[in-house]
Amino acid sequence: MRHQKAGRKLGRPSGHRKALLRNLVTDFLKYEKITTTEAKAREVRRVAERMITVGKRGSLHARRQALAFLTDKRVVDKLFGVLAPRYAQRTGGYARMVKLGPRLGDGSPMAQLELVT
Image 1 (cartoon, rainbow, N blue to C red):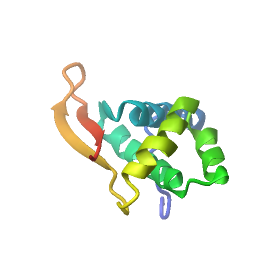
Image 2 (cartoon, rainbow, N blue to C red):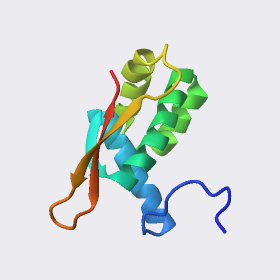
Image 3 (cartoon, helix red, strand yellow):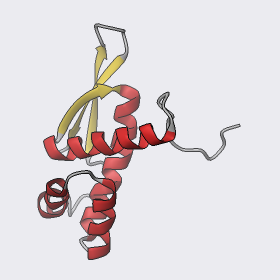
Image 4 (cartoon, one colour):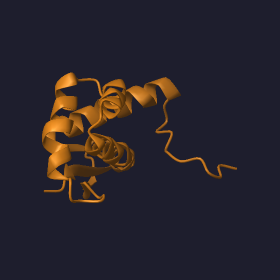
């Protein structure tokens, strides 16, 4: 039984899954909009919203936590300099997922993930 086990496996080994999420979250915070499968979008939304909450703390420890997860220092600077002040008055729900329909190649359900303005 999988009681109390959060997160999707996405059909990948744990190292590959962690690298995939790090790259997707980094690109999502960099471009503020990505298109991916629904399952990946749900996982990216979970992690990205946590990263924005870490950015809102603004401390040195929070910055080091973000640097440990995100793969680009410029994205960390954007997180703490642009995104955290933008969402300072918002308590959560920083990302929106819009379903796009099936992908043409394999029929996988696609979604667009974007930051709420």
